[in-house]
Length: 408
Image 1 (cartoon, helix red, strand yellow):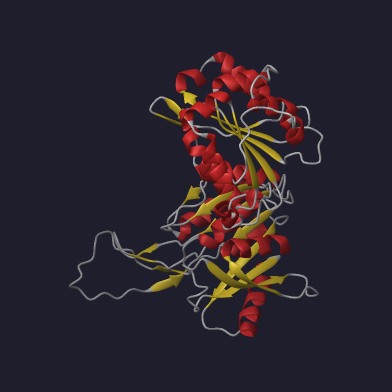
Image 2 (image 1 turned 45 degrees about the vertical axis):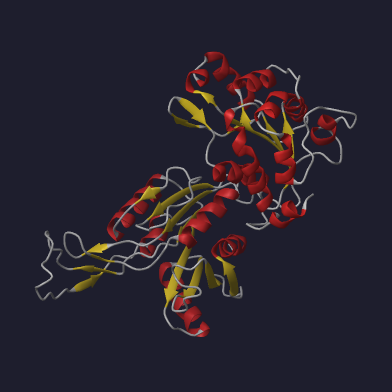
């Protein structure tokens, strides 16, 4: 492996540490994006071995993949019997086979058991050995609509092959965003402690309008809630995210995320979701408004006028959760300002008792290093059971999310 390739291993996370991924590439025009996918997987800790079909090797020089991964790309099956070595019963077998991009031709060959290229041979061998297989189709939209292709995709789904849907633009099924491909690989190989669980997460700030265009809010970025939602999804959970008016978009991999604007909207949406679904975990990480204006002006108030605004407390969402869903594990967040560690935990535990929450995460947002908009956090994790000691954790918000989910 080249020094350049070694230098990037694990630079964005350790989720794929020790994992070997065979990255297969077939002859789509999208294959020029494949080296970036390989390197992104490496940035999360994986060892990546590239495999190219003969036609793909005409589209893109295999030497690019050697530079990208530090591994010699496989373009022909030779004396090492690479398909058995990496997809058979060998001790060197891969943890995952990713074919990105894959053409209609290769999909059909693999579905029919034809193994006439290094890619189809490795994929066919993997299917006989229960090695996870992910395929990312790219082709013209009319080809995706071909009934034979649809049937072959379904046939492979029935063999437990995972497909990542392409982006359909300009009548073409284009390769999805790099992050979606990499996150799907992570979820496939990650710990499955939340497999089959339903998790509701709230994130970000809400707004309390005072006139037609002005509102009261807070600097919450949503990063903490987003990190929890992503980490829960990686662990196999079915995640429902409800988020407020953050300038940062939530992880694209979280399907059907619901955006709201005001605390009332978040309260109503979460309440409705809880009434319609049984969630195993409800994690309230949003920084909802504590106050709303008693009177909201319909128009824009002139800046030349004096203006007195009277605020009243909002209804607390956390107070309703256990009443609506007593069997859910309730996780609250409590942000305080310029409090000692002892005061912080004491206030949090009082709030935990008031709401009958199972866990509460408290932090002091006065320190800009760990404040709302920071990528880092320092939190105390407190438990309903008095015998459990509080856990203090400091790190990136994704690392904190991992610690929180490990704790609960």
